[in-house]
Image (tube, rainbow, N blue to C red; front, side, top):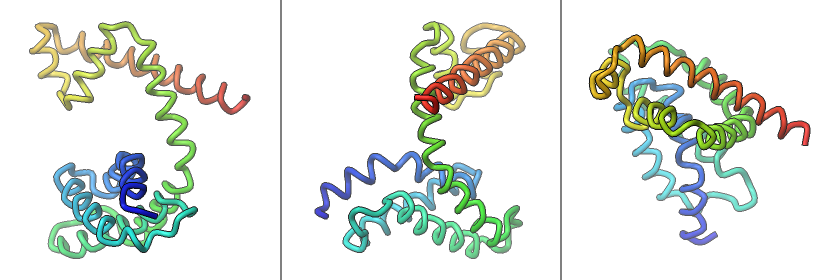
Length: 171
């Protein structure tokens, strides 16, 4: 495998890999730090990746070890998960990979089906990581109105994603 093929695999899987790290380090700054370390390690070890095997499994194994190393470095701070729990969650998340990918694909499809105003509201809330209060202020709306609208849109997206995934399962 050459470096450009490896880079392509990495780019196709980077969001999922970051999500994997974020599962164990819910503080975004910590997850970004570990993710950056993982990226450097992956690039350094790209020649150790065996073609025709699961890139995401290989990358997540490296990420898991980096998460554990990060946690050891931060021992003086309380940690909510034990190493055994991290091992178990890592395996479960990897096993759920195809289901998560199907739901992500369905979500992208469902987002496209939203009314423009609803899509803009969801994008402002999540893509820009704005909380409901700040969003309400920027839109000059009541916070409760924004909160209710987001709830309605989330429910619609969930129904759409569930239906889309069920349809794919039957196909």
